[in-house]
Amino acid sequence: HKQPKKKKLNPMNKTIFILTICILSILTSCGKTDPNKNVDEGKVESNLYKSAEIGWTIEIPKGWSVVDKEKKQAANEKGLKAIEETIESKVDYSGLKNLIGFQKNQFNIFQSTSEPFELEYEGEWEENNRELKEILFATYKNQGIKADSSATSIEKIDGLDFYTFSFTIYSPKGAVILKQLLYSRLINGYAFSANLNYNNDKDRDELLRVFRNSKFNKK
Image (cartoon, rainbow, N blue to C red; front, side, top):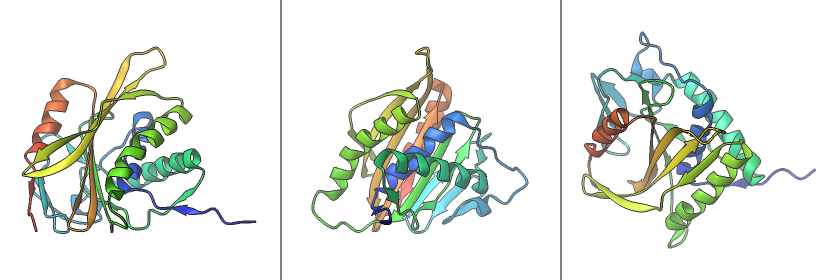
C-alpha cells in the first residue's frame, strides 16, 4: 500500500480549521494552572503575553482566561483530522506552536499560532491565502456547517500589514451563531496567525482592541 502523501499546508490553514471544532465543543481553562504551561513559546506575565520569536506583545483582557493547553491540543487534533479528510492528504504540523489563547466563554475566543515558514517561490504566501478559503469552505461543508466569508483585505497593526478576512457561521435554521476574524503574516521567518471568534459586539470590540493594540518588535 502506498503511504499517504504529506502536504505542506500554511499554518494559518491549520489554525482556522481548529476553530471548526471550537464551534461544536467547549474549551475550558484551569484557573489554578500556571498560564505559562499553556503556551509552546513565549511568556505570560500578569496580563501580558510576550513572544520572543515573533517579537509580539498582547494584553490578555480582564475577565478572560488562558485556554488550557491539553484541551486546545485535543481540539487541534480534531480540526486537523477534518482538514485531512477534506484534502484527502496527510498534513505535516510537527512545527506548529500554540502561542497565546484566551477565552471568555464557549464562543468568544482568541487563538494564535506560529510555525517556521521558508518561502520556496515568489507569491507562495499569497497563493496560500487564496487557497485557504476554498479549503475552509469545503471543510465546513464536510462538517455540515453553513458559512460565508468576506473578501480578503489588508489591515495594518503596529505598522505591519496583515492579511485578514472574516467568516460567519450559521445554525441549520439560518441564525448566526459565530463570527470569526482571521489574520496572518510572515514575521521573523515564522508564519503567524491570529483568530478572533465572537458572538456579540461587546466581545468583538474587546478582542479587536487588544489585538489591534498589539506591539511587534520589527527586525
